[in-house]
Image 1 (cartoon, rainbow, N blue to C red):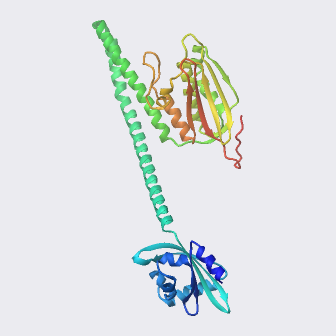
Image 2: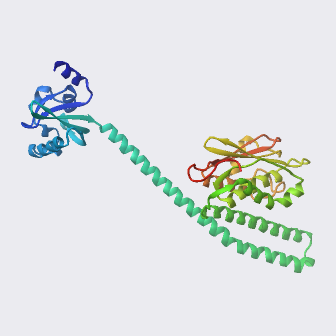
Image 3: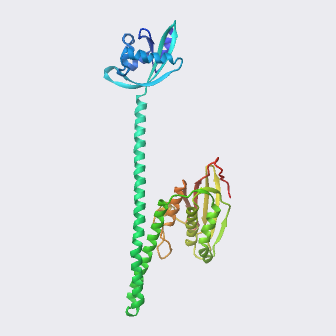
Length: 375
């Protein structure tokens, strides 16, 4: 018994042995004294219901112990607000178990202070709620911005067309009355309107991506690449480009949106080519555990490292308008599409030595009749 008592005193938990018949403490360990802040002698004189107001009267606590006895040898678990010395309180995890000794029932109650864990859990839940609230707010804000972009780009297109039409009409009907400067001014107006119209169309396209629901299904990416190359056929012929392609995987994607990604990446390779050098574009894929990495590599002018993040922002162009076509929205669309598919896009490049765009996409989930192999 002395060895048992010594072992109990070494426990960090508070241990109480209660006689059900007399509703008194038979024994307590040092952990119980420390938890309540009283001496062993003083604690043994108390009744078991004095540790917490929530335990009620002795009769009510006796009924609780009877439930524990009825469930023996199972352990009953609960939480309890315990009153410590000096008026302090703490939250304890309580484990109660009934055992028989000499024909009498003894309740073994073990208490562990979990106040800090509760506070940590509360902080974590509060942080999760705050994060969830911020995510919902950002989602709502993004939806509002996409709606605004859609409405703005759609509604502004018509007045832009009107300005362009009447400016061109003025030029056709009254060109003989204009001097050289006036004709240049008219050309500037038409050019500016056309560029604005192109930006509005690009913004409309970008906003539609977020508004449109993904039509995901198992798609051989080779088919999406075929669609993109068919759309780019005139530009490929005009630039005398060479395309090298390897088999691509079948993934759960929206074919139309992935076609758009390939069209933008290959189109950029054709547009930003080295002067006097025919474009060489390579499309390949590699298996990396939980994802496929599809790479589009070119031999173009390249990108300086400090611009790697900027190029994926909407309307960000690295080259003056006179040196390249486009609105600066293609890579922003690629980023948005890939992220909508649960992936990411990255770039590696060296100025004058070409660029490689890597599209990281999750594999098809097994067990649903889907394959994640190269098509």
